[in-house]
Length: 320
Ligand code: UDP
Ligand code: MG
Image (cartoon, rainbow, N blue to C red):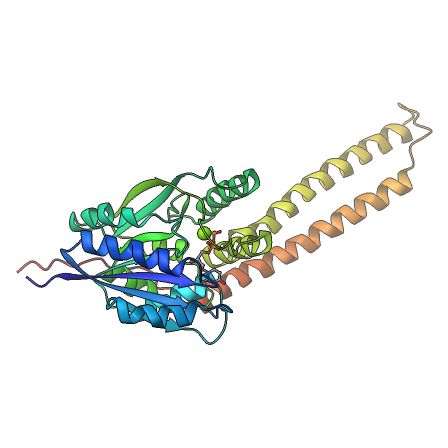
């Protein structure tokens, strides 16, 4: 039987110091997993250093190496997407160039793939190497997005590093959105999923390209392509404000009547100011309700323009 092909997709932005280490390591892993053919798709994401030249050079030494060169820096997510678009493998594994995603996991991932799993997530079981702020925000991010994503279960602490089968990749590539976040697209597509856990080591050479701003961008992208639920907040605000208005108006009315009938004397109470506050609470509630109507239509419009498939069929078993 012909050997299956495994595609390793590795985005590279200014990774000159990592290129030799990464390729040496991956070559070892390829040797160990000789039951498979391998191709490594290195995507040069507009590096300003010698990454590209180095990659071209290493192509002489490593026959498995294919190089995709982007016309400028597009960012991690885009670089992975570009690599995935040319992947030929039966199984595809996106991985970081800095060896923070240990290539040793490829073997257990392939074992689970052979057991029939279409997706094998590599979960960061510990993020000790990260600052507490990154750990905290990342933890919250995965929880929030899982909550917002409805029926789609978003695995916690799984980045790009995972194995996906050919059919999963084909379904991911069919997703029509141009705003792409791989880690929420794979769970959207579904299929039988397993997991391997690892402790994420430190980056050995070079430095991280993620700062607070790019992490916030990623979070916003992931949330907005996954869910229109944040739009519902407008309605919640409207409800709360409506309740506050109702209580305030009723209280004022009761106090006003008690004063008129001389049951109570409240000399410091200024009904004029209170009435103004009530009117503005009422008007704001009305505006928020109007915004709610707009956001319902906006959500529907978003879903229509996003044009994601309504379902994904895994298989059909005819009964002949
Ligand atoms: N990367 C990329 N384009 C960018 C930024 C990063 O292709 O604009 C690549 C980078 O070379 C690495 C991977 O994305 O292979 C992850 O980047 P990094 O290690 O900086 O992220 P972190 O591990 O700090 O989250
Ligand atoms: Mg890294």
